[in-house]
Length: 275
Image (cartoon, one colour):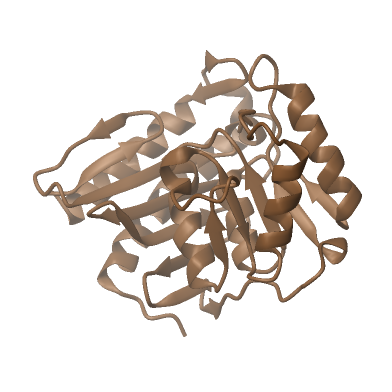
């Protein structure tokens, strides 16, 4: 059974309270006020309300910690060592189209390192979580990445650029290459849940460009605590801040990385989008 640490309890309470608001709004999605914040990017009253709830609950429990949030940006706290990274609604486009595949993502950073993360799928009541050195879990079940060794047997998650965002011809070349060497590619529309699925062994790998820290912070530590490998697609070790992420098990990390780099020898610069 997962050890319910004080940090886990703080994150769980915040996530469940925000989730109640999202579930209510999902049932009233036709009535939500929605604005466009960029090509293919939407912000709704549901995002904003969920972020207010998360910040309120987390600040009440840890008043000195700062924030980096999708809608509210950065807010330094009194203790500069600690910062929450939150995405109140990853999968906004799914949400606004009535597709029940979205989540809340919360991570805690200490001195620049992610030490805890939680991804909550309120529609399936699946809470993926992990803390440094403590393993990864979905609810109370221990998580392990898949054991597949061959790309040809593997299912890979990714994001795809939309509208004016990203270099579509370059990204299509990458997709063509990965599709030709794997058992399938999935574009689900929520990067945090893609990473949670890698940790759970549902996906054998995941890659994407143009990601923000709040998109991947929680998933990064959950995958690592589930025994997976996470890096930049280019091979560097700072996927949190570089916006380029490759997550797999230890057997597939090298082959998938080489496949992606060979398909785009100039270096992957396409920016994939998320709803």
